[in-house]
Length: 626
Image (cartoon, rainbow, N blue to C red; front, side, top):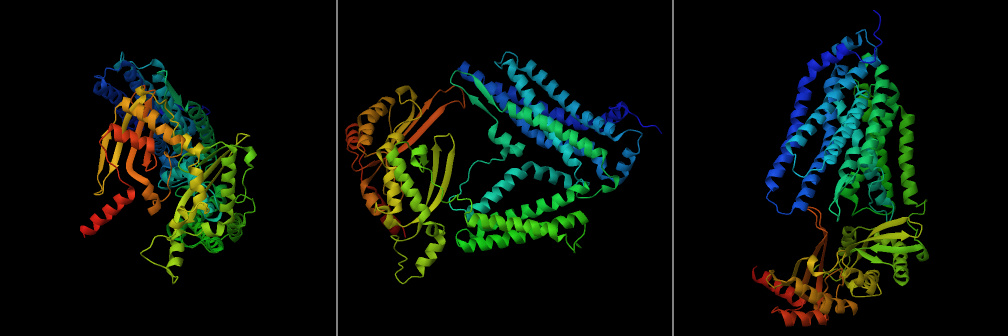
């Protein structure tokens, strides 16, 4: 019989519509519940608000966020639609029947693809029109309806096209959702596992935002797409360009799916991998994935605190090699659909194991120079370290450079886990289990350099120290504390991100910690806060007696700390429920914070004592209570 040369087959489309109409009916009901019902309920519940500007901002923000939710929900909807439309590919009888029709495969794929996509897009258009009619006069801007439609449609086009592509890769309906989910999150998951393994081997390697996030669309939408409130009472939708790019990628995946469909073998039903040329790639991906997932999981849960240095490198190499073998064998079992997998294609497995071992060698030997790299202070414009401390002055940057080089010079000591150091200390004759003076502790110390060429350099370290180091300015921790409490750092903590004016004061208290563990608070008025800030807190900060950080509460530190804490919260630019720009900070008052203590004594009835006295009282109460 002569093959039909039409690109779109109306008869097949009509039959598919009759067969799959419950799918689109369910999708329409879902859209009605999540858009018009949801937004009208929100309007009714919040219509009492008197702030008209803020109300309009909130309801428009609600609509746009619902659009973002639809773009992400398309991940599940697209997969379900493809499983229904192309489910015959995974059934021998259905596959034989569909491919025996006098219709070209390209025409058949296009017909099913469009018959699945177009009704869902029409449902979105219908629901937007219904929502616009139901919310007329509610303050929603007309353009935002189109933004919602754009989010929902573009997200659906991508995930539907990607689902079609994944459907062509396997011949097993049960495997299809697993393949789809894995490929959606492979990039960020694999990057995270590789970074987790390298963090064991590379001293100073820090966790930064994923550079491959864009290759995991759902994760990217979850983290990067958002609605921002602006101070001029407008909204900014962040991410529409990304959605257009994803939609374009979805069309490309659809074209690739059509090409694979035209060459798909009928006898691949129930195969894990339907495309023969992809079987070697599947083996390699399974082996590498299993290797690095095993390394990251085992070290993070069992070995991080007890194995370090060259021993960690040897153990990591063994785990990666063993994980690669297990992944390769598992992939072979899936491909052959049998536990009889020997003899294995060993050359590919040997290559994967070599890649794993080479990775360990390069990382442990620091062949890239990553661990020893410290930027020239002359090229640094700003440095950010722990406790959100920012430094710009050259003398402080040079002091940090010296600290950084000292950390690198003591790599072997700081690489050891705290638990390992404690076990070593417990084995010595001088160990006193009741004393904490020399008990090993850990300080997380991140460093972010901003360079003149616009680039950044990030490192982070877990520094080992003991309580006796805190009060000694010649130790590494002592030098860090000195840098954290330099005048520039103190000034930065006294420079709120929100203008410190009376109108912006949202909340302010002076808290008092008592010996029985309870807290008492004295609420301050906006006028009192302004007076306290200008007449007491700023002068104390200028002479270095406020806005100080302590890493560990030793007895010497506790003697200089009072049980008073000043907490201030500011808010500026509030243009809706979520639109405020907030700033909060808590300041410990010290025994030498003379201006603050004088102000508190003059304006309140609060009495203070040192934290050493409070801790002694708490210890005595605990002893009395048994």
